[in-house]
Image 1 (cartoon, one colour):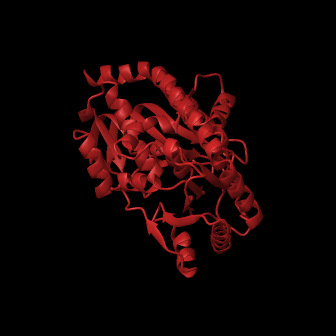
Image 2: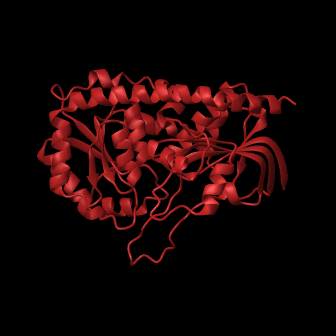
Image 3: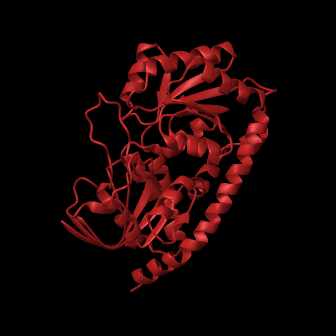
Length: 371
């Protein structure tokens, strides 16, 4: 099938990743608020009825094309929207996977034909080896490039002399959070007036010892009289996490995939997170809820520093490292939340500045679609 569209937006949407699905609504909001007609936008996504309903309820004229069934798409602009898309990982010697210097489907697949590529809110790195010339050329040939963190920006600036822009995940979807009728958690949750509640969100990862980590988390939190709950944020992909919870007789709940409001509301009920999922950290921060980040990959430490909480522990979670982080948080909970609140406000201001830099591109898109 051959389809023609003025603007396609592509990314890892509808694939069981809460963060990507949540950000998609923010990307659509950014485009449509800049007078780009909904009817000119098509989303390339895996089929997910709940996500489709949320898109259609907010953007009824935007069409969704099923990723694994379309033929050829010819588009003037391919808006390739973020998440961590370019990286190399050093894997343990026993793992027989190739080293990834990854350019994902949406930029290389011959079925998407676009005149101009816009890269929106992407993450670059970590690079265990120097990025390939091919990768650098793809990035530098893009019409517009924005990244989500300062480490990604440093990688871009090393590629060649070109303007790259620094956005912020938190800025894309603030209206989604305010619709939930949650109270201003940053003002009302005080460590000295109530018993803390922790939400634990982990993800499958090579070499991660779930049984040991879950045991250490439960032991540490029980010892400190902190109530807790486990939450699976990617039911499709996190099978090892689920198996470990089952084998340890740990109660847990799962994200109703595609139902973004359900996950947001659930996270908003807790006082802090222990997590190895990047977008769990970002989502919690929007509610001024701090996270102890388990650093399975560098972006966890990056976001912890970016949000000025710095509660990061190594992926080999020991009781000692976890106890230090929990004690630091428990003993200075209100101060951590104040720092986090200032950081999220700074992130929103930076997103506002980024939005101004995107304005000329958005005006061009709107002008092209009017022809």
